[in-house]
Image (cartoon, rainbow, N blue to C red; front, side):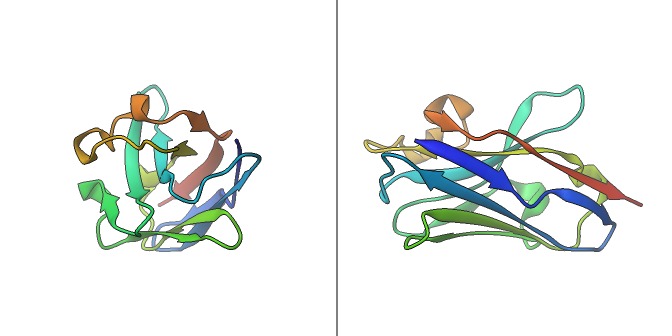
Length: 126
């Protein structure tokens, strides 16, 4: 499975960006998909995840601002980011956890994911 993330760039506080993650290869629509991010000098952290049946999960700092979704026909997962803040500046990574997927309590742990895309940089200025 190959994951190709795109959509990062420069934004001002309050702006919106949409990240895309296109999956190719031996994909499985039952995979759990997620976005993580890594702030400069910090460890990678969970941002949002989506199960096969479209149940979604978010870290508290993005709830109400970010929306994760998936298009099964296109094998693509999206992260719509609204009301961006400077603290959202990071490298964003998409990840896939194919079946058998991890239990919900592990969904926020990067060790649950087998496949990772290259990061896309999001920079938000104040």
